[in-house]
Length: 255
Image: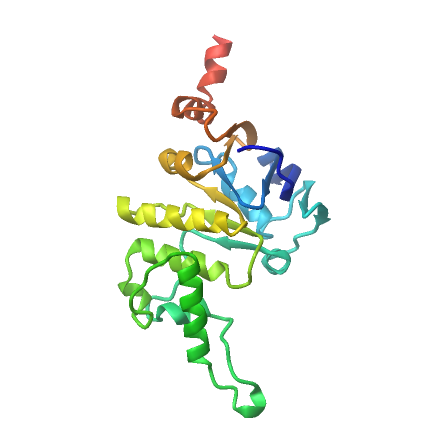
């Protein structure tokens, strides 16, 4: 990453406890427009809790979240959505029996005004769906095919495209390439790059360090609820990343 970017989203000293368990302890990080930041760490490192806090599902016990430089109180997912934060979870929440257009607009269907019948505007939704898919370079030949017939990569792309309908400034992606083959993984990584090209801020959780090295501008490493390292693209190698994740560097320095 070159130059200094102004953060769209900034986390300052966020702490979250569940009873006597400290899930997050003084976490600070940021993401700017046109930047991809990866969150990595072993199971239990705090990645999911941090994303849930940003998404408004969990409320921090200490610290603050700033959006475009102003403190915000994310009292729930709707509050996060309203200011421009969208989250795509690993389970995708697609309906297999519905087609691509129906899944894209699920809960946000376009319809004619109530006083002229309130009919669903299928043509309008399909036209907008094609524009969104084209802008993000996602190729789905038959928009009327049930989502259950799509490949894993196509399903992930549909879920990510759906998150852009409200034109969010920040998109959170939970394990976007999990359980995908090589070609499907590349398809999703290309889509993440298109989101960056659109000047959206993207935060991804991933266990695949190869994918992280390919797409992330910065990598934030969490371990046991604490931020232990941060790397910029081109200024680290895989061994340094693994050492930070596992705590091997700390063990070696103490030896």
